[in-house]
Image (cartoon, one colour):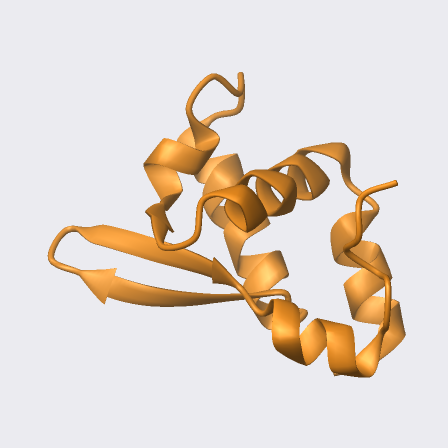
Length: 86
C-alpha cells in the first residue's frame, strides 16, 4: 500500500464520504453506505473498486450483498492519523 493511490482514492469527495460513512458503520452494505448519495450505481461500483484497490477497504460477499470494512488498523499503521477526523 503506497501513499499515491490512497490519496487519489480519498481525493474524490464521494469516495471520502463513503469511507467516512464506512468508518462509523462497520460491516455495512455498499447500498446502505451509499444511501442518500445522488450517484448512479455504476459510478458507485467504480468508487468502491478504487477504494478497494487502494487498500482502504475490504469487501466481503454476504449473499446478494457486499459488506464493507475500512482497513483502519492497516491504514493507521502505515499512515498514522490519515483517517482521524479533525
